[in-house]
Length: 236
Image 1 (cartoon, rainbow, N blue to C red):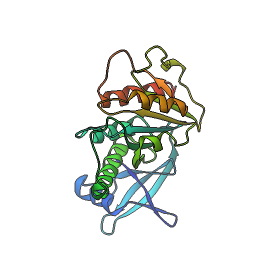
Image 2 (image 1 turned 90 degrees about the vertical axis):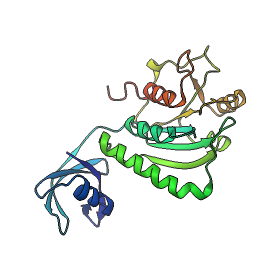
Image 3 (image 1 turned 180 degrees about the vertical axis):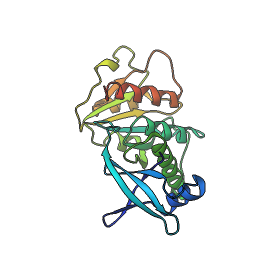
Image 4 (image 1 turned 120 degrees about the vertical axis):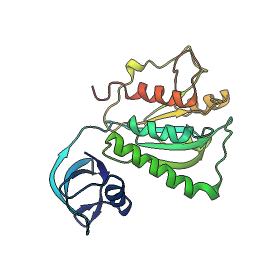
C-alpha cells in the first residue's frame, strides 16, 4: 500500500496537490483503492472515494513502531558530487530525525547562498520520496549550512565524532543503547575527514570519538556504518 504524508485542513486529512498528482498521474490509483496517510506518528488507511474532485475516506487508524525511540541527528560535512543526495536517502532509511549540513577545514564544496532554495527543494523531495519508500512515520528535516564551530556548539545529550585519530580509544558498538527521548548526535566528515585540531575542539565540547574500524572508509560508507552502530539494538 502506498504511503503519503498527510496535510490537514481543520480536522480533515488530505494530500498535498503534488501528492494528489503523483497518486493520480504517476501511480494511477483508482476509486476504491486504499492508501496510507502518516500523521502525528500514526497511520490512517484511506479509501479513494472520488477522483474528480479527489476525495478520500478514513477506514482505520493504527499506531506503528517504526521510529527510533531516541532523537538522532547527523551532522555531516558536505561531500563532493551527488554523495549528499545518497546520504540523505540512507539517513532517512536509518531513522535519522534531522541532518545538519556543515563545512570543515578540509571542505572542498562551497554551497552558494543563491543556490540554497533550489537545493532545499531537491533535498526535501529526496527526503519525502525515501520516507514514503521506507514507510517512515515522520519526515526527516535537513538544516542549512553551519560552520564547524557553530555545529559543535549545538545542544545534544550524547555526542559522537567519527574519527580515525582515536584508534586506541574506540567506543564499542555493543555499549550504545540510549534512553527514549535522548538527543544523540553523530558528526562525520567529508572526503578528507577532520583536521586533528577539529577533533580536539569537538572532544572539548563533549564529543566522544567513535572509531569505525581500522580501515579508512569512504564518507558515504562512514555514514551508513556510523548510523548502524548508533541504531544497533534500538528495536530489539
